[in-house]
Every structure is written in C-alpha cells, then in structure tokens.
Image 1: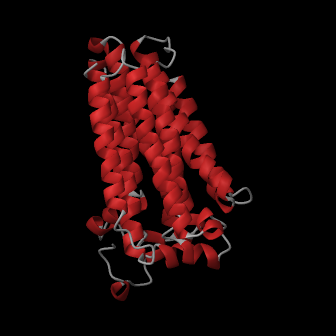
Image 2: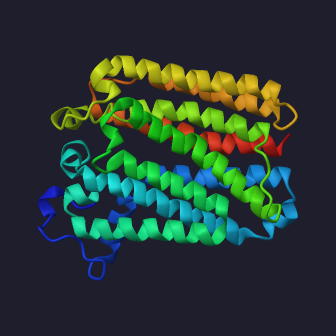
Length: 322
C-alpha cells in the first residue's frame, strides 16, 4: 500500500530534494520489490552454484563481480517493470492504484527518466563486466521492451506474454548468469552448464509459467476494461488457479526425482526433504483461497513468489552439501 493516501495526493509529483523519504519509497514500489528480490536471489544462487564447481578461492576474491552483476541486473529489472508501468497507467489506476505513476507520486516524465537511466546503466555496466552478462542483459531488456511497448506489446496475447516472462526468468537469467560467472572464474573461458544448472533452469522455467498465468488473476477487472486478453479471462479464475497449483506440484515432484538422478552434483536427501515440505505447504495454503476475494488472490500470488524465492535458497544449499 502507498504511504500517501489518495486523499492527500496533490497534482504535483514527489520532489526527491524536498521529499526524499517519500520519493525513495515510491522508487522502491516502482521497482516492484518482489521482482527485485527474485533477481537478487537468482544472482546469488548462480554465483554459489558456480562457486561450488569452480575454484572457490578465485571466486571469493572477486566479489566486485558479484556486486556489479547484481547492480546491472537490478537496473535491468527496474527498466522492464518501469516500462510496463509507463504503458499501463490507466490499467494500473484500476488494478494497482498504489503504484507511483497511477497514484500521482511520479510524473510520466520522472518515470521515463528513471527507465532510461536504469536501462542505460544496466547495459553499460554489463558491457564492462563481461560479454556473457552483456548478452544476457541485452536479451532480457529486448524481451521486456517487446512485452510492454507498442506496436509489438506482446502482453496483449496470453501465450506470448507468458513466453516472455518464463523465457527471461527461466532460461535467459539462469544460463546467462552461470556462463558469466564461470567465464570470470575460468579467466575468459565459460563452462558448459552442468546438470545442476540445467535442473535449476528447467525448474524455474516451468515454475515461472505458474507465475505468468496466475499474475493476471487479481487484475481481471482492469484487463477486461482495456481489452487485455489473459488466460484468466479466457479460462476463468478456478481453472487458472488449479492449473497453477498442478504446475507447481509438477515442479516439486520433478525436482525430487531429479535429486536422485543428479546425485553426483546435489545432495538428494536435502533436495527431497525441502521440496516435499514445500509441496505440502502449497496444498495446505491453497485450500483457503477465496477466488472471489481480490485480497486473498493477491496474497496467494505473493505466496507463489515466496516459493520462487525459496527455490533459490534450497537448490544452492543442496549443491553445496553434495
């Protein structure tokens, strides 16, 4: 929720010099914190996995690469979510009125400047740090731009919208980060992704499908009004809810089985116990979701993101304990 209620808003956007606390809080909301947390954990997880299979001393001595990679990825993240907000102001005034542009905390001009600066910083920093990182960031920004910006605006089409989300979160980010970190640690020679990296990538790829199709369930009113076709509008809330739950179930069962097949690179006992516990939690939590209550739906959506965060803690731990 915004710290500034609609009744206290004025026509003037926040001034970072006169209202620094409120302005930076608005910037935090503008960055879509759950996506920033996901980006942060993916960077850390792939760093740890690369650390586990390469020369740890070299990796730990070059923490500036970790910091620079994280900043570049976060800037790219803000560019993508910020561009989406710029193109969806009217929709957000219905679906997400607390977001800074929709709430009047940022003007369009301020938002455009933030998006331009973060996009440029992401590319410049990635270019300095390494070719694989620059390729990963460039591809991510290109897909994010095609997702939101007319005339392409792939978010209008359910299949292409979902493809954009899970291709970036699942394949581009995980493989790109591993290739980048291994390239740095191996001093200019990227390693072929290991079974562990492929396992995590496949899990996140499929899991992100669940995020991609469920994310529009809380936003059905605004999407209908502005003719944004989503799986929720086509199939209905109950169908999307059940599909989401079974996709997540498939991910956890697949990872438990993968722990047996990948026993040489992960600890199968740790992987099995943690993912079985997460699976039980999913089914327990899903029993009490009222699909007619927008707050309950939004809460379950955030719960799915927390499961996404958790994977980037559970899997690297199983790799380190192999």
